[in-house]
View (tube, rainbow, N blue to C red):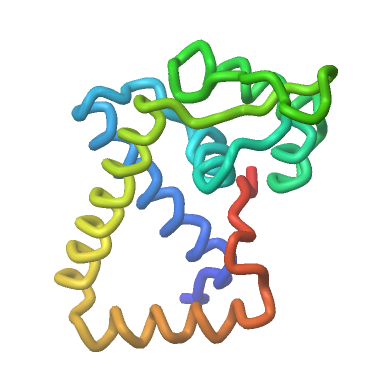
Length: 148
């Protein structure tokens, strides 16, 4: 039997974690989450940004970012505010509902990680974490963006 390629295993693991995360978030009042929403909210978490800046951070088109912002705004996760230095631009900011989602998401991710640790054992979990950290050396720490 041949081993699955590493990229396929990592993708399956990521998908499993995200699916479990979204299932739990749905049970806690956030039923319409999509992976791209989470990446955008994380990118906007520290400070408001223009749609163009969000597009750059997520490495997507401005049009795609505008659609993403519109969907997040419709769900109540972000709001658009006037830009203080550019009357033509707007800043996208995370709302109270968006912050609630981010807080719950962080907690659930820690819970899922603990569950994985129980499945594979603490030593294997630490080894896996260290290996992934080493494999991503040189990458930007905030280089989180959808891969699909």
